[in-house]
Figure: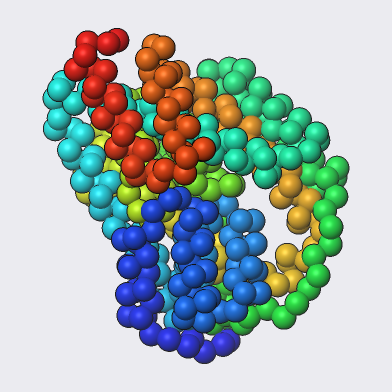
Length: 403
C-alpha cells in the first residue's frame, strides 16, 4: 500500500475553491482539475491524469466528481477522497437545497421564471445529446444502436417500470458492443500506486453489489420512505453510465412516476442546477429536499446526495488499485463502446419524454428554447448566464400576457 503524499486539509481547501468557482459542466470541470492538480500543483502527471479520466468515464456515476475523488485518494488516502468530494460538492448541494426551499414558498408570480427554467433545461439537454452523439455514436453501427435504444424507451409500455427498460438497454448494449464493436488494444503502462489495500478494495466490491441487490428487498420488506429514498438514488448512482445529463432519465423515472416530485418541480430544479458551480449530480439534493413524503427538506437532500454518490466511492475504492491492467483489455473497451452508444439513445428519449413535452407548450416557448440553445452551442455563453437570460425571458412572456 502506497503512503499518501499530502494532508486532508490541503485537499479540502483546494477542492472547496474549485467547488465554488467551477462553472460550465463536466468537461469544464475536468479542464479546471487538470490546470489545478496536474499543471499547477503537480499532484499527478499527465499520463496518470489520463488514466484516471479513462477510469471515471468507464465507471457509472459522475466522471468529473470521480476524477476529483480519485485525485484526493492518491494525495491523502481515503480521507483525502472524502475531503475532495466534500469540497467540490457541498457548495452547489447547499445552493440546490436552498433553491428547493424557495421554490416551495413562491406563489403564482414566479410562474414565468419557473417556465424559463424548464425551457433552458430543453436547450441544455438538446446540446448534451448532440455533443454526446458526435463523440459516442460517430459511426453507423453506434448511431443505429443509439436510435434503437431511444425508440425502445419511447415505445416502452407505461404499465412496466421504465427503469427496468433503461437498465436492460444498457446491459444489452454492452453485450452487443463486446461482440460486435472491436476496439483497439490499449497499451499497458506503469500505473500510479494508490493507498488502498486489496482487502479494502474487495470489501468495497462486495458492499456495492450487496446494496444494489439488498436495498430493493429491504425497501419492499419495510415500506420505509427513508429506505425507498436511499434505494432509488443509490440505484441511479450505480447504473448511470455517461454521467452528467444522462442522469436525467434515470432520476425522472425514480421520482416523478412515484409522485415524489412533480414534472414542473423536476424541470425547474434541473434548470437551476445549470446556474450553480460544481457537479450536476447535486440535482439529487434538490430532489430529496423538494419531494413530497418525508424525509424531505435538508435531511432528504442530504440522504439523496449521499445515496447517489455512495456507488462512486465504492466503485473507485474497488477499481483504482487494478485499473492499469483492466483498461488494457480490448473486451472491456468494446463493451463500453456499446454502453456509450446506448446512453446517447437514453438521453434522446429523455429529451422528448421528460424535458420537451412538459416545457414546450407554445411557439413562444420553442422560440425561447431555440435562443437558449444558440447561446450555448454557437455563442459560447456560460450556462449560468443562459439560465438567467432564459428565466428572465419566461417571466417577460408572462408579464406580456403571451401564452
